[in-house]
Image 1 (spheres, rainbow, N blue to C red):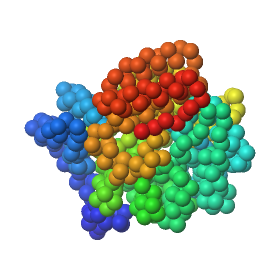
Image 2 (tube, helix red, strand yellow):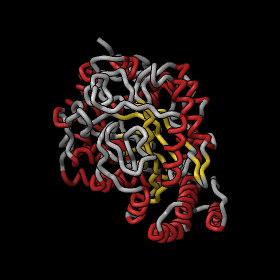
Image 3 (cartoon, one colour):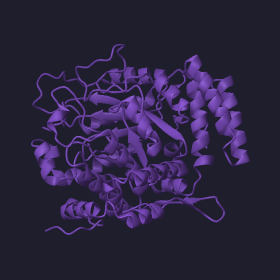
Image 4 (spheres, rainbow, N blue to C red):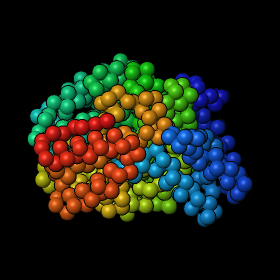
Length: 484
């Protein structure tokens, strides 16, 4: 029997089944242990240094966080939500980073039973973008105002080899349209080799994202009956190969609804602990997608569906347990759900997403090649305005990635509380770019008022002055891409 070891490079040892079951039992036994719950909340609370210049959070282990997740005492839940918000503001401020997914190809040889791209689905339209079509998609995204993309492709070594992905990345970065540029390309493709991760690193990717789907090995094998993704160990150990290949930032995620949420939650945090133990830096991002309706897929066939209330609790507990990670919520979720969880730790959201291959260049939203139904179908301008009405700064910043502040260097910046002197002004300058180049008059009015308020919060007077000057330059000319 495998023994739990977060430093091991073997999947069944750092994501250990018996350890997860013991964790769930411990959490259930202590879910009303008020003294323990209070001690965990106190342990996780942000603490400022004596000079007030840096902030530190201890976080929680997977077992400790699982106790909070199991707790159903109303007043303690409210304390959790308040703490999650406090932690999020301490490290990420009120910024929300904007991105969009770009689907390159839905050819796939896997048999994943929850995904419409599975190889046996014969009635979905199969499509792969040419490089000219990639350009067209990028221009359409730039014309909305996007600066950051997450590219997606099915696993198919014939139709989607690594060379095709690399060509697409090169094409995306090469498109300069009006004042538009895609400044960061994150990549969500199947688990691959160290050599291929090195190629992705050399191509200039931002974060490598790979969802585990489920950490329950038995369930994983049943959900992935055919294709290379059937190999649980190879898939689960992908992040270690990615980091060996030089990729600094990796993004974790599970597809909630496939298996029991308490099992997935513990496994997700164990994976984060493993990355910290082995590589000295945890996940750059954690995503929280839920199973949604799609062509040939009925989410009701999965008996582990997640209520909105438990979804909210999971997000808060991840933020408390892994305080420094970015947290992503996609347009799988409705405006109502996204509204409920923004204050609980989310730091990145997608806007105006289309999950079909070639969806952005077409005026009408195509549905014939979608990976899943999009619940939030608002335009980017509408999402940006909505965020500002809720007092969140929509950020199009990519400065840290382009300045080499990735991996442990980004985490050091985050942990030292330098967000207000770095990420905060960068967010405001990129918001100014969006307002000048793409926003509606109503959104512009909201945005300029927000910028005026938020500039005053920058503690360093020199940084505040330079940011103010740069924003005036953005308004008065075509000068763009200022950054700290």
